[in-house]
Structures are given as structure tokens and as C-alpha cells.
Amino acid sequence: MSKKARITVVGSGYVGMSLAVLLAQRNDVKVLDIDSERVEQVNRQESTVADSDIRAFLTDRVLSLSATLDKRSAYADADFVVVATPTNYDSDTNRFDTSTVDSVVEDALTFTDDALIVIKSTVPVGYTRSLQQAYQTDQVIFSPEFLREGQALNDNLHPSRIILGCSEELGAGFARLMLDAAEKTNIPTLYMPPNEAEAVKLFANTYLAMRVSFFNELDSYAMAGGLDAAKIINGVCLDERIGDGYNNPSFGYGGYCLPKDTKQLLANYDQVPQNLIAAIVASNATRKDYIADTIIAMQPQVVGMYRLVMKNGSDNYRASAIQGVMKRLKAKGIEVLIYEPTFRDDSFFNSKVLSSLSEFKDLSDIILTNRMHDNLNDVCNKVFTRDLFCRD
Image (cartoon, rainbow, N blue to C red; front, side, top):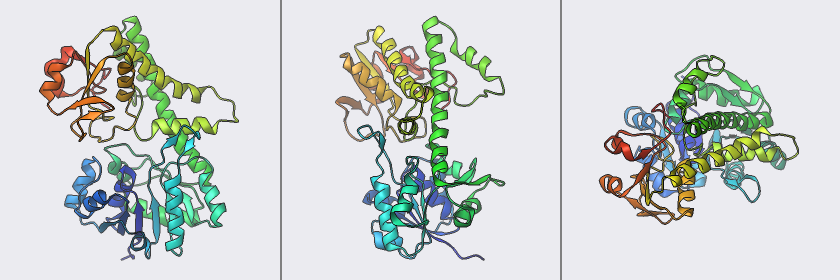
């Protein structure tokens, strides 16, 4: 029996939590976080994120998993350090804020001897190479993740590919950990320089954003012309070259990755001619404008926002598209009410958050929902959604 690897995962969001659970099946995993509540959750074998597979694994599987707030104990004797901290896009600098990653890498190099530090956070192209040069080490590598909110563990168990931004000699050990933990077999594993690996992540997410934007603009055209968008989309997507994924219209793309990754890629084009990348970023704002203008034309007094989360099964409402629509409506003086059971406060950006669904329905003249839900079937005459196919 092979020796268990000692792995420190820094950060317990979707990326960190799913990787920690995945790797704890066969290895000793410690989660390091600055949030004491999340640390306690992990130590109680509870998920810090909304993911049914993670919850099931924590309940049903034997995992070697613990969490701590203490850096020294987390890094002690680690063979691998996985960095999964957030990198929000800073519009002032036109760049990801990588300060959390910077700090983790510095700590890991200080408190470990020869651990391989694997950056899973999304970073600008050239970032990993800059760290390698600054610290004169090749022990810091980048490995992009391709996870969906609410299905992060499933995507790690059945990955489309594993990419290591380093040589095969350096990254084979970590690749083997990921391959051994997966349920899928024959997973393509690619080794490439870190700059190329970082670019893969940004271009992959920007392509997905482009596809979302395309079908949203198709839907806007159909709305304006009184056409049946679903029939058009079905006819378009039966072409095998186009396919059936990411074609359900929405209020725009949002969430952890697509808004910030598209903006970072656009910033990377600073000295490179382009039209398409800028159009993808601009299209998302245009779609929210169009949705908001459509609602404003209906002249409602009160608009209800059903859920702030990005999609069913998620607990994330960061940069959700419905918030963009909400801000545009409020700017026109329209009262906005919110129903979001995962939100603990009674107001969100000065809009009232209701805990009673029936009260929410009664008070709202129009109810906006990015994705339709059975809870709204009894007031479907009030509902405005562009969810044509009842799926994310």
C-alpha cells in the first residue's frame, strides 16, 4: 500500500472544499482557513458550500480530513499545498487581486521545506512565472480547475481534463493524486508552461461567457420581434457543430468566475488587437439593460426578486445577473423586494429581504426569477423569466 500524501488545502470555498474532500479519500488532508466558522464546519464533517455530493461524502465516506486556523500546524510536513483562495477582479488596477495567493505562497515557502505548491486560484497570465522568479523556485506551479457551482465535487470526480502548468517530472505526483481520486478513467492529462496553463483557464471561461452571451442576444432579438426563442434555439443547436449546452437564456452570466475572468482576459489584451473579447464583456451589460428596460416598460410599482443565487443548488450570489437588473430598476425609482432564504439579514443594498414567500408573492407586482421554480407556479401570471428550458 502506497504512503498517504500529506496535503494542505488553503481556502474552503467551492474549489478548496471539493478538492479537500476529493483528496481526503486516499490522503491526509488539512484545510487552512481564516474563517473560524468554516473551520468548525469542516471539523464537524459539514460542507462549507452548497454541494450535495460533498455533503454525501462527508456523511458516508471515511475521509482523513481536518481543518485549522493555525498556519504552522497546517503546513507542517506537507507534501503538497493547494492554494484555493479567492482572487477578485480589481477594476481600479484592471487585474485580479492576488494578495491572498501572494500571502499563502510566502507562508508555504516559509513553513515547508520542499512541498509542491499548486495554485488553483484563477490568476493573470504570467503570474506563476513571476512568483517562480521572485522566489527562485520551481516548486510553485499552476493547475487550473474547471468546476461548476453546486457540482464541484462531481466535476473533480469526472474531470474533462487535468492540466499542470509545469513539466511532467515536476507535476506527475500531483496529477497522480487527482487521477487516483477520480471515478472517471482515461482522463486527458496535459503538461505545459504555467503561462499557457493560466491562459487555458481564462480562454475556456471566456468562451463559455461568449456562448451564454450569444444565446442571450438571440433571445433579446426574439423578444423584440415577438418570435419564439425556444424554437430558434432548438433549430440552431441541432447542428452538431453547435450542440445543446449553455443555450438556455438568462439575465446574463454571473457567479464566481465568468465576470472576473472575462475582464481579466480583456485586460491581458491591452497591447493586442481584439474585438470579440471586449464584445463579450459589453454584451453582458447590454443584456441586463434590455431586461431592465423591458420590466420598466411594464410600469410596476413593486418588483420582487426571487432568489439572488446564480442557479438552483447554489448558495452563491456574488455578481449574479439578477443583481444587475435589480440595480437598474432601483435607479428608476422602482421598489424592489427580495426573497432569498440563504440571506440572513433583512435588507440587501437597501432593499427589503422577506422571509415569507407568500408575503413576497402578495406584495410583488412582477416577480423576476433567473430560473423558474415550482414555488412560483401559483403566481406564474406575475413571473418574468427567460428560462425557456427549465435548466441551468
